Image 1: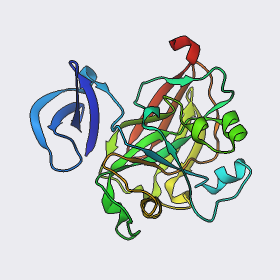
Image 2 (image 1 turned 180 degrees about the vertical axis):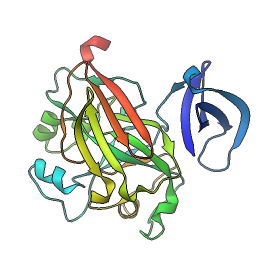
Image 3 (image 1 turned 90 degrees about the horizontal axis):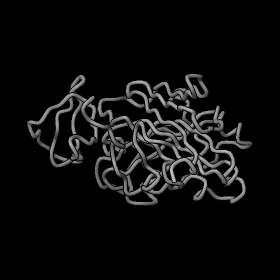
Image 4 (image 1 turned 90 degrees about the vertical axis):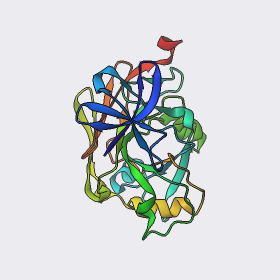
Length: 256
């Protein structure tokens, strides 16, 4: 099942994709829902970020090749950090590049959407807390990341967490192809089987630290091949079995 969040005729709602048609649901996908009976072609709607999370929890250096390209090794325990909810944008939205921030990089990733309130999950049952999966881009101001020594500012700008285009619920996340293209040229290519820690392990680890709420998003890490984005670039994150998340890059000065 593919869950979308959309704007149609001025109204924002959730729906289920049925081929190229959106079937509206109420009240939301985090629990029991009903079909409203409203259906419309997807091209008549604008797809939004599939969730508005209370928080985005991201994992650093979870592919060995990426850890090495950043000058380190995979850490003994997962390195987690938060991206603010205000960094989230949807498919087709612009990534706004701060003109003063220096180099800004793409980081294509598999995103996990939490389906219910959970804490202190066991790895053996952690996958039961997952509503589904999406594509994500953990956009990063690389120079600021290096200068600050911690990642909040570098990862937290508005528009620095594109998500979408929807949530895929019927998916085995253990061995999916993940790739990133910039202007049609491949930049990153990996499989989720290469993750140092898989989805269940990460959820168990994170939920021992903080309560996860319905709609929260876990970013599982990016493979090697990260690189800079320039104004006018089109960046696409594709995850096998989900689809393609596409966004264009604009300079901050262009949207003031």
